[in-house]
Length: 96
Image 1 (cartoon, one colour):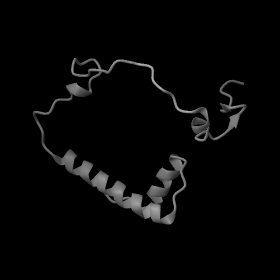
Image 2: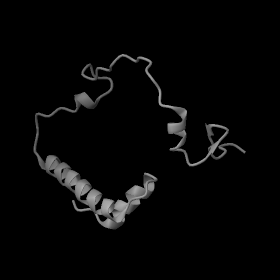
Image 3: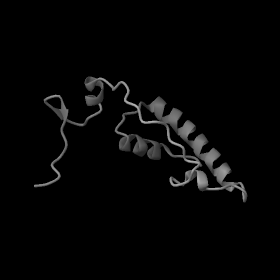
């Protein structure tokens, strides 16, 4: 599946990233190759394949233990926010 430059720019907009023209061409090729590979995988006839591994209630879905770890620095996290205020994320009000 070949993605157009317009589609790449739309994906970038949804991800809130700005791409240089060279990056648009690079990602266009890379994402198109990934989607082409997925198309090939979907075309395979695998009658013995099971979807049980995707079932969260299946015994096959073994989760790792939940352990506390190091967190990211606040400054780094806040750089991803559209707006901040007093060192916190600022989001539009949900309730009036």
